Amino acid sequence: MFTILTALLLLVAIASAYEKVCRVTPLGGGQDDGPNINSVFAECASEATIVLDGYYSVNTLLLTEGLSHVDILLSGTVQYTPDIAYWSPNSLYLTFQNATTFWFLSGDDIHLYGGGTIDGNGQVWYDTFNITGDSATAGASTRSFARPIPLTVGNASNVVVENITQWQSPNWASSFVYQSTNITYRNIYIDSFSYSSAPAKNTDGWDIYRSSQVTITDSTINNGDDCVSLKPNATEIIVTNLWCNGSHGISIGSLGQYAGETDIVANVFVKNITMRYAENGARIKVFGGSPDANSTAGGGTGYVRNVTFEDFYVYVVDDPVVIDQCYETDASVCAEYPSQLSISDIHYSNVTGTSSGDEGTVVVDLECSQECEDITASGIDITSPKGPATYVCQNIASENELGFNCTAPAS
Image (cartoon, one colour):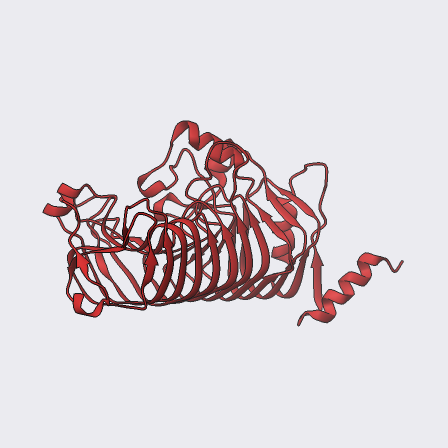
């Protein structure tokens, strides 16, 4: 019988580059669709289109690895169960800051698209975290209370994710790029909101870790932490045309967290960003040093180099432009053990708008614990509701290239 579903699958086959079309049939009734999803991905791992066009309740880790030339047409909804007891030991452990994930998508030449939704169902995690405060350094998960990432593109290359909505990530990030290259996200809508008085904590939009050639563009993000965060060893990154609301900014870092490790972020271009009602705007955050050779709260080495923030509009933002080289580090410790991670070749162009006044009249705060070199700024026009704008600088070698008069940080 020629049904509407058959017709739709034929249309998918015509639109796709692949003749093989595999549809995941939802079980319904709240049953776990995870095993079926994993099975279809295993059977159709190469030269195929996988169709997810229904509502899928997932209570099994989605481990979709070894894909090669696969289109994933997600026009339905993948929703993870709000079962902390299950997911804490069973989500996939990704090592960095104890991150775990519900879905690990891996392989080469993958296209995920279709207008559908990935729902992290994060409310129970927000409510529980609000009561327990159970987190590791820098808001990371603990092994006993994992807050999984809804989608991780990991150990992958040549991946495009577009026209997808992501709801209520339990933690950072709605999307995690992990040990991958040539990854593009576009036309993504992210909303990590809370229905209760408990805030949606640590809900980064994107985090990029040990990855290169990543582009994030043409997207809208409502969340409660970094809009985009470049974690250690993120290089050749382009971030353009984003509308970020309620976030902690476009952040380089945090870096230097682990003593004995080298973190690098280099060759980053950020352009045409609107940042509204946020804690930070254009931000670089680096842990201070540490006397502890096994520290997980500072002491790492490395560098941040060749970063441009251009055409960056802020509206009611606490710290519109900030370099913090003592991130989550006590001032006395940072003074005795400055950061071992250098910052250079950083450029701000056409950063405009308004601060919130939360930091008084300070609209730019560039504080390095060791000298930062080749920091330039032009077209900075940010006002404060508390009075004439002031610009704080410390250990900036190129103050004469900033385009404003610096004042020393308050003691």
